[in-house]
Image (cartoon, rainbow, N blue to C red; front, side, top):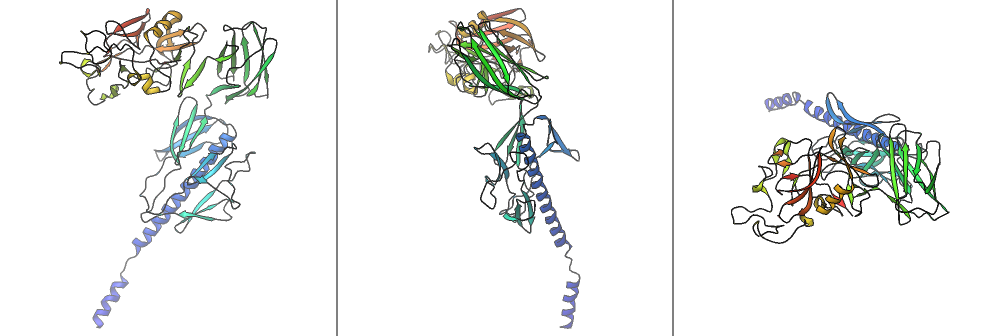
Length: 513
């Protein structure tokens, strides 16, 4: 018995609990890291809301790195300190615990409020908590901490704490960022939060003007009509001027020294008609914006607008057709966009420069891959065929919506122009070969002085562009009497309406009524 007891005592004396201590220390470190990340993201959200409240602008959005590794994005503002947006951090999901999903949302009163796990964050009185006050000082920033295995939230800068849920489950979790993604375009940076809320922050490059009323207004002979305006600009002061045709008078009255709002007073001599014009010029010292209007049916009608987010331009054509400002698949007028075989609304490639193609289209744009060809069966065309010698006759001469690249990809009232509409564009407009942001192409000036740019995008044959960097080929939605597709072709020396094979890949410039 004595021998057995001594062995047990010896074994207990040698027991090593360092792994328990280390595990506990690791857990505490993860808790501290998670707590720090949550409060850091809250601080970033607060900075974003402050920028919105103070009408601040993003000067740049650049990668943010720690120890040589990108961990997020840094938003640099025209005024104030930058804001760091962190990526999410991978971690094993706890079965019961979570990181609190803190966000901000703008309510119907125009005020931004904090949210917690998708619901309004409420104070002790049950009221929503403002993310920032109307004077920039009254907003409260929540603070979070982990005590034991529980989250706690404080709405009084740490004086009192309220439970906010379990912090970790059986496996623990390092936590995800409140920010799901950061994207940008020419005028805005978009922050998508974990709860799918999207916050749009204007860039310093943006210069825009809106009018009220925004719809057509009437100007009665001998009377005056006021149109109020608001300018969005990172730079002030802004100068707004109005130039009109001889039959209309205009006066600009700024509402403030910065020129960001004001009133345009319009009056006419009783002679205005569809040829009357009003041009508003906005200058912030860095950029100049012009907004042109014409008189239609006794009112003001804008020359530009958007459908489903894609811009149209009214060139003043007899048909009234409006043309898109860029190609289908492009974001800017000088971008080539996507290339389509006629009657197939999807490009053959995923990324042709990397030789990535849709299944079955690996050989590119050719007869064998064409959607409406069947080879070795005694006929060729299976749709959009007039002549029996070419295939199955259906007498369809214009693309149906499901086969129209513009209609399928942009939706709304967008479609590919007909042969007659391409002819009208050619005959009624001035065509000048030039460039846009270093890209060669055609500037097209309509009867009303408005313009659009067609890049010399060439066309695809087999696996890539044919090789003409000064040529443009744009599909119509029409086939001719020979079962060839009508298209617009141009080079520095000509602009023509032509007919050709439907199996090649060409861009599409959409139109709308």
